[in-house]
Image 1: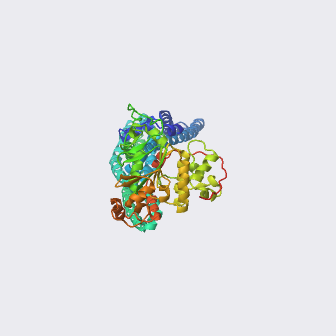
Image 2: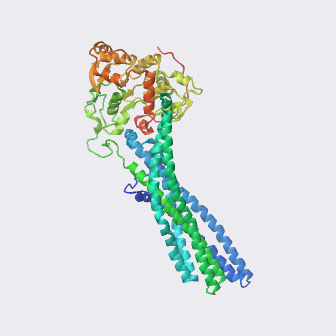
Image 3: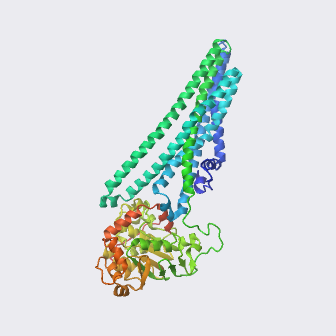
Length: 633
């Protein structure tokens, strides 16, 4: 199980059956051991009827006490041995199922990481969660066929051979009857696949809606949309319940036949054997043995039916996993495809350019991006961070010609969608390298986050909830900024890093951010005059294109649209740019608080994979240290 988690291997995606077979062949030794234990255990079940018949015919009927006790002792020994074999079979098959489950989980996680920022646009979070839980469990259960399933086939052949020594007629009835039982259940297994597929589709959609509701619950409550979403969830849940009833109806018939048909088969064979005993064709001991053999056959037949049921569900789930594994990133990584000409990027600080918008970020400077629509700024950040296909360049080299791992190491896009995972505050902000106390303290100060650390009982070693739910919007932003500053990327692209903080904190943060990033390339998207005052260069965008570039004060003087936008709500002046018309049309003159809520709601719908891909830092723990509050200047 440990090996499968570290290196799951390359799955066979040519079909659902081939994927399940890959899970089997990935652990050949363990599966072979499970099949061996299962076969020995199942064959061992056929020995007690034979030993019991010998005890009756050789000991009880002729009154031979020694022979009787000898056969009874053998019967006891076989029972104890088979109990131990059954324990080993169960233990081995549990490991087989767990290996398959963890192997699939690892493959799914690897694919989610590979898709990166494209993941939330290709598949819902609820679908990924359903694959990682329900589908994985169903597919791992399918591998039970490799243990008791193989043993059931061998036990069926052994019983037929033992019955042949008693009566050829009884052997023929068993050899033909057991396959007939499987044929009777076959049509129900096909129907189960169809209804199970529909059920899984609705289950994934409902899980996605649930994730959206939980993630945006605060915003939904504030906008009065909680009841609307709750109503939709109830309707979808009712439809899923109806599909569940259909699945349950088919499953109940399969379970009923799995218990009823073997019992009827047992009664028919026993009746035939009793008539043969009454006619003197077989002995009383042989009659008891026949009854025992056929009773033992109930277990293999049940395994046949259960195995068919598990296989039907496993094929449905495997198809969904393959569909997810077949998704491709929005643009291929040249390094992964082995294409020639892959580059590591410029060897020294260089200009980062986006031809689509006209934005150019000079190395070693603090550049600001101003636009009426936050979505325009986000698209520029995505292009410069290589999260979408574009013609963006870095030092004259196209970003898509640079190996993606090098981009992730050197360029960090820090936005409000980046998630915070459950753990200590220190784990949330520290990177892949060891951080000394002085570096962490300096980053905390630069992000004006001393109050967050001081306000918690154990400082940086205090625990936070998943997603930073126990932090306010402004606190989450500052914790995310600490993490970005500690990563110390060559290029930092910060998307609205101060949209949820008060003016006093924002003023201090703007000054300290410039100081902390001195000599490093930094791009900030913002409409805050406090942040724009500290920028070396400001790009003003209208409809996603740069219409003016210069210092903040110069743009305030010469551009009426820019002046109205950064002043947050001022009236349009004659000659104002078209961006003010767009701003009025989409109500961009709303307050900072509602704008923060909107971004928080959008951020709650993304998957953790994008946060992982954009984050350059991981988690490592250092010793705690003192963090004293310092007043902002």
